[in-house]
Image 1: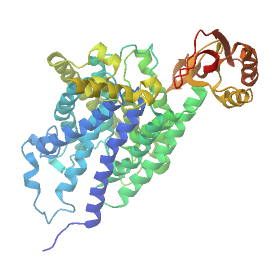
Image 2: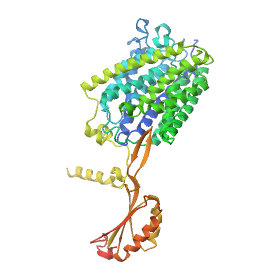
Image 3: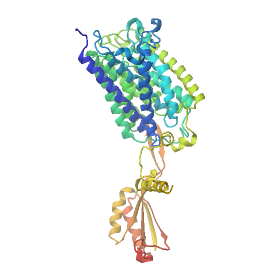
Image 4: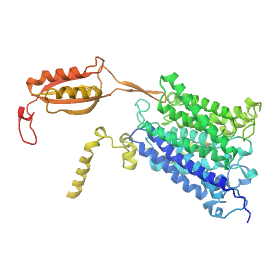
Length: 438
Length: 112
């Protein structure tokens, strides 16, 4: 029997899916190192928790909502029941270049990661149960539909952002603007951490942050180059652009810090890496390597400046999901309208290459639509959850730390100052003795 | 008997230890401490946000000595700990009523 299946494409798609999965622990470490030592485990758990719950929902209905045929070919919502449970996707389709399940798996990771990104905004103070409920409902009502708008490329049955000609190769709108503005909305309802911004909240482990940034970068090659869904030229261009933009972004962030604060910091380097990755995500197949580095450098500088906004406007976006993902996503999505070039796999000229204002306008429309939809729906979800079950841990629990309050664990054995070290055994012995006497 | 307590810059610990070993001192206790004096704290910057860290790490040394040894020990510590820069620390002596060696039950100077 003749088959269209391409083993190279299939192998790359499944490899890319696994790479994107690795971004979740990468993100967890990146975030986990940035929170205070009393909230590290909770931060890791919020990211992993998003993975678990969105993974289940993806199989049940998520893939259908995102990649089912559009209701009325309007491009707003996929047929919810079309692939529910994925039962119908197990048979071999001789006309398909790769098995359906490979693509389902690849896109599953995108959904999980996008929801995980939001966790950085609400570190240190959210109830774990409320987070899980939020993660599930947000995926259902916000991510799955928006993924349909952007990533469903099935011609007339595809999403409206795609059909309008808005360029978003790997998720500047659907992933980063979407998660960034959602974090802002959730923070708005949740409120700021006790003592913020008066009390210094020092990162618990910057080494962990660097490891996380490195893993994110590695996994991001799957995210961006994998979005070609083929082992081809487009994938390779996306790969190189992802690399080049990120280097330029880290330099841009460090330079901004050096000028503003006097020192180039490791947290700045890690943040610059992520800002560059975010910005190049929508643009990686539409620009040249020089264009990619320009986008990266601009994102590095602008995001480094944007993380200061929360102090001016008094919103405690704890780990700067807004400053890095919303701003970086906007920068990348909009700059496609400037730097896009016909010579790229996407083959469209932006303003700089004589393409006029049209593409920039389209990019603006796409960015704004996702931003407004996500903002409004996230606010409603957050307010409803707050009214029904509450979003925050108690004041006392927040002070003693969410790790202890929500998970009954501590991340680190910190020696004397943490009540551990040589004294650690004392408490345990006391406990054991007490149990013996009962 | 006197308890000599010294708060010093952590990197001076080895110098002080050698100086005291030269004086036939039988033991000392060392612990990590943090605090501030005239040196003040330092500033850290995270994503542009400046944090002032008031407490800086120091090492605390405690030595039990006979009254006759006290001044010699204090001088040795001060000499070894001095860099001439702000934040070198402080040394003080406090009177001690009783000392008991746990293993033998010896008391007073014999327990030193």
